[in-house]
Length: 331
Image 1 (cartoon, rainbow, N blue to C red):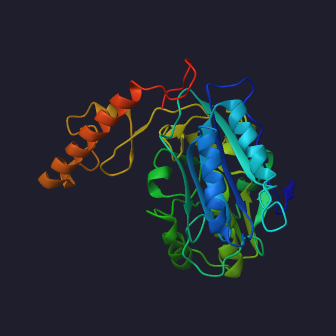
Image 2 (cartoon, one colour):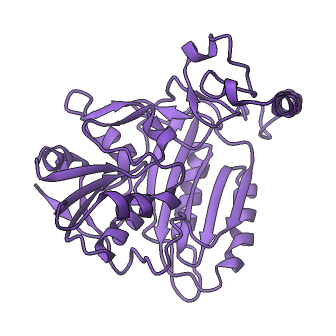
């Protein structure tokens, strides 16, 4: 099995331009005065009519953005050549590409955060200590090792719709809960080999660094995350089961990285299927069969009003041009 150490791993953009190109990107890099970067990045996103969200913190950048393929590729190239504090902090930014038919975001935002992925543990620095990267092509042989415990570092609602065969679900609601799961369930003596994975790789940067800090010696993680695995490994050889949750309007992607069959319950935030939507307890924007019995009358009233406002706003947007040319994308 070939493993590699800490370095950027960007996937190839989809062959043939999709209607909309999506870039999931991150880079751990020390940023002096990261607040000063918010304006330039926000201005460039708006100028390029991109949609999505970028997070900036002293530890780096993280986000998912979308737009016209040539424009988005040019933005990523500009970002990698962006000079700050005498160097190019984003030159080795990790990017995962995918495509879809409609813009999966409604607006462009650059937000300032304490962490680009929130674990809530001080002193965890993936640039100083991190697990061993395993390429997608070598992942199957690693997880076939009976001495390896395979951990899904994502949240419970993400694991619900898909995960790797044999993976442990920590049943967390947020990534902040992951350290508690480790403390209560993992031990360096009993679990000498730990392999972890997440959507695009960023959570594993911190989770593997955290385990290394706690004395785990053999800690591995999937290079580029699930999205990279789905791109590089054929369905016939894949150990992936189900679909992969993504944090945009697509909700999930299948093994071909195309929009999946799930949508989102805006009441509880869990993914729902067409079968669940057919249930009498489902009400768009209000509740699904999973949460309907726990929703109060006041919550129903507020959610119905919120959905009414959303419907009105979307109707207005549908009547306005998303871009300046006649062949505009749908937002």
